Image 1 (cartoon, helix red, strand yellow):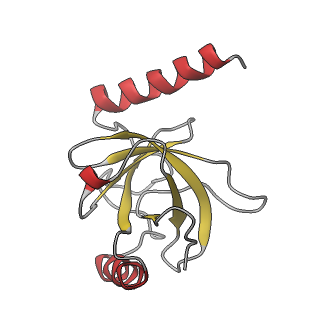
Image 2: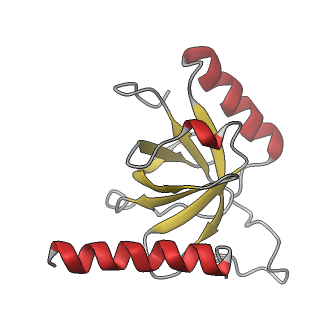
Length: 145
């Protein structure tokens, strides 16, 4: 794929996020479209992960996947303590509620209350981030705990 086509797909996805407010959620087959999947981290788990990372890396950011773009490797991440401190092209890590690494990703756009992230293909046998999974941004060179 040429760089122009790749860039056009990224721009289209970002525009879609902006216009639709992250639109329909994928991977959530519950009766209520607002319900989190059973695999989602609860608020206490997210806070525990946030505290753990903050102790190790005070400048870390921990948020929650709030929406996915069906058919494309993009997610929206909210519940961030300071999204304005994040920057485009920063690398992040996605964890499940048990703190297992799912995959990594790159911040595509920073918004006032969330970030849009393009995630990398998960390793063989792994899965893509879902609503309710946790995103962690650690300082450059630091690894997930």
